[in-house]
Length: 182
Image 1 (tube, rainbow, N blue to C red):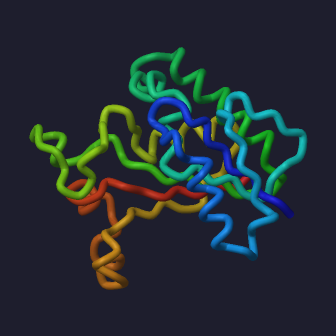
Image 2 (cartoon, rainbow, N blue to C red; image 1 turned 120 degrees about the vertical axis):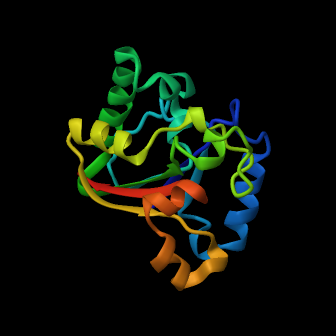
């Protein structure tokens, strides 16, 4: 099968994304003919076929940043994401997998008004917790499979064992990976 990489190259995205993608694809010859780059947003993406896997790597909040910020307070924002998640659901085959990685909305350094030394460029208010995303995804028919908290790579296996939990993540990366099945 083939894969599609969407990158709208809009606000928050690098204007050199397609060139970076081509350089990466050229280095991974095994996949070079199987991955197609489309410079379009998820909202504008039109596809009739269904996929086995959809990965939203650090991008879920970029689908609609304003709605992400207001998600807990405004029904209109919840409806925007419900509509987006229904589209994801339609694009997946039965039994297909959805993987989302992103930062949690809550981080110790943000709470005390400091920039995180681990994630210095994150605007925490433009993110949501994995529990919020899970609730919305369940409402449109997804079944949650797992939630894992990211630890700094330098900590290795011991770090994952000791620090891969929401309490420690709050003080470190506040980054998660959630997996769902249709």
